[in-house]
Length: 93
Image 1 (cartoon, rainbow, N blue to C red):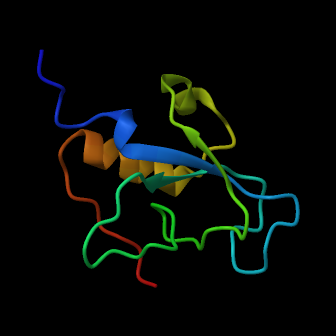
Image 2 (cartoon, rainbow, N blue to C red; image 1 turned 45 degrees about the vertical axis):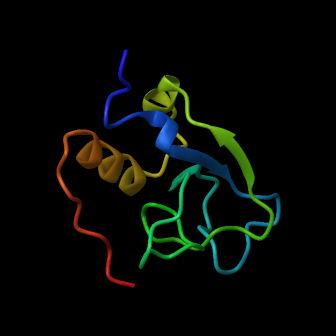
């Protein structure tokens, strides 16, 4: 059985460390990042464009992520756009 082109396996969930780095999201939010690096993409940023924390906790993305209130709203919107096959408009950094 072929795997669908889009799946949650393509992403990882990031939870910031306890210190909430100066360059990362300043809220206790979880963010998503692509599992595989893309050419021309930024390797130190989440889907929404925020910088990765110094010591993030990585975990697989489960379906329950859509009900998690800690999920960054922009990461969620980008995930939904990619799920529908729409190329999202990335934030200007």
